[in-house]
Image 1 (cartoon, rainbow, N blue to C red):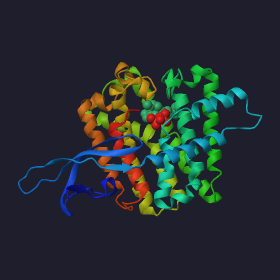
Image 2 (image 1 turned 30 degrees about the vertical axis):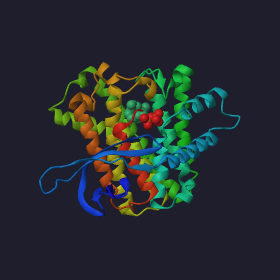
Image 3 (image 1 turned 30 degrees about the horizontal axis):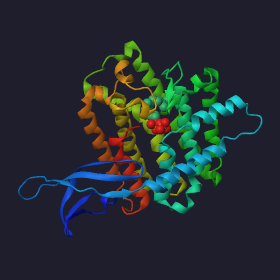
Image 4 (image 1 turned 90 degrees about the horizontal axis):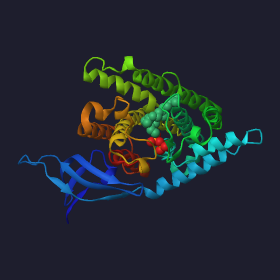
Length: 366
Ligand code: GRG
């Protein structure tokens, strides 16, 4: 019998086995894959007695494909139902809302809501968390519509199609965003019992509000203005400032997605803390890899305008750390995220899903 990994991604930390004997801990790994599966490409395991760290090539497949596909279908069907509206909604507004919301996004945030729920409760009842899953995707879609406006990032392409204001007009895009934000809270109001809906409403409002999503966006815009663009203090402190923006602008919605799933599942405090910690590191890994995509990605695959950061002299991880440094920072964030999940059953499907989603970030193409 050859060497094997203990349950692939389902153990934390990962240990390396030869013929049933644990011979080392995996220190570094490279995985790739799409939503169908994750493939562990190689791993470096802890030094043996002779001090060398062998690199092992051992592909191991962890199937997460069908579950992610199921979640996506359920989410898209719920988003579709939630945006039919009655006759009082003007046709142009309905079309603009549905055009942006139902466009081919990754559905990462609503999937995180459902997976967090499954992790803390049970997959059969995940429809209980669907209103919250829809709500975070609606807040996300509103933020993308507004971010693309000429007054903000002035982008023409989003999710592989013309941005909302290009397809319709600016006023319609603003109103579609406004309506999506309101609809998100209507969705949260569908959660039961009402006491849970109230708590979730507050959490989402905080994440979407002046100190998080909107505040992070405001700070990002201010920093782009000439007088704020100079590096402030040393590189280390500038990176900290950049991270503070990202934690609010990108991280808050990812974090609250996991938290809402946990809250609806009536998770324990230690589970909620673990999800929050995972969300923090996941959000960071997501942002770093988003910055890397801006440099290394293909516009046709990513579905939005790229090379913006360098063009507009924006602060980004590759700008401060270089490509390799940014890749290393992403790997570290992925490892930190994986370690945050230690309180959960390592063998469950939702755990594999979370590990798979975060593990694939360094290799994302969109
Ligand atoms: C307008 C209040 C307000 C906030 C805007 C969304 C946003 C905040 C800024 C977009 C700029 C940006 C590139 C942020 C990085 C992270 C991010 C939100 C990427 C887009 O999310 P994905 O990749 O998109 O999950 P899809 O389309 O797959 O849902």
